[in-house]
Length: 206
Image (cartoon, rainbow, N blue to C red; front, top):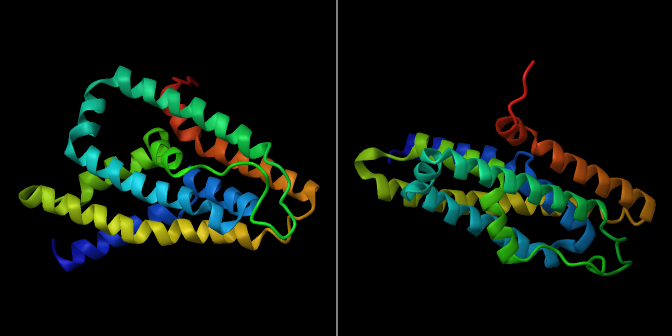
């Protein structure tokens, strides 16, 4: 893999990781509601879970699913239902504890965040597009491994940025009314992030 190819891959990893999506919306909300320390397992689950998914897709899981559209559609439907449930949980998060690391609820665990990547439409788009565009046929396994390393190095700091944004908002959102509005807004943005997947599943006609 040439330096130019590596830089292009790093740019792809950064842009796709730092832009808004289900993971980042939930990490922002978690930073507000639970603080940075309690959100670290969630952050690690996102980064490591995504890299594992990337490697599995690169090793053939993605092709198997694309060859079986019924299974792929069922996975998309499951992802939409699960993300609606997560949006409901975010909308109903409790107030920030004064002086503490968050409210009395529970942030997403490492394993929940890692498994969430399997039903995250943006993660699927990133892995399918990335493996098609940035792996090298002549040295496929090595280029896939490099891709995993690059995403791991780039993704964790970017998810930390979103969690940090949430932590920075904690003082502003000490008011339960403001926090309620924020959580509902985050839930709404999470639902909006699902629309491309919804349009892909439901055959809308003009």
